Image (cartoon, rainbow, N blue to C red; front, side, top):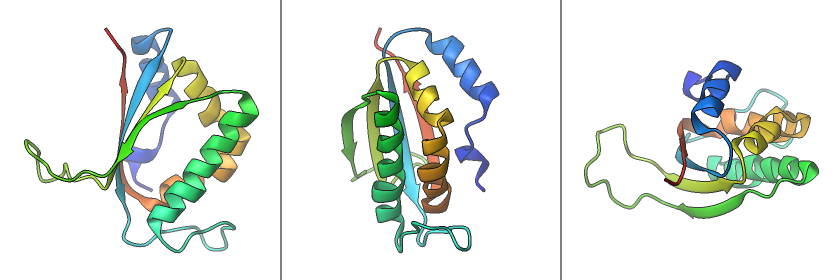
Length: 138
């Protein structure tokens, strides 16, 4: 498991203190594995990482959000086409930007049983690397 993709409570607590109340915009920088790495026997495995992410992970994430009555807003999703001022590790397959009414909403999704069972396994199986950045309007 890539430690960059394990969201732990101490880091989430620290982020919650820094972010405070109100809307938060999360920036996701995603690098896919060439081939998914699902646990043996995992039901719902996808043959390729992109479908594993968009159908498996995003599908499970949306299901968890809906069950909780949370409506994240997809602000942007697209592919990185060029790196202008980047390092060699700054090549990302996809970039997604999502707005939440409150960081607590995101935490509720991440802690839900539906997320843990239906989304999280796909995240670990299909992503080779990930950056998850919280931003807030001034």
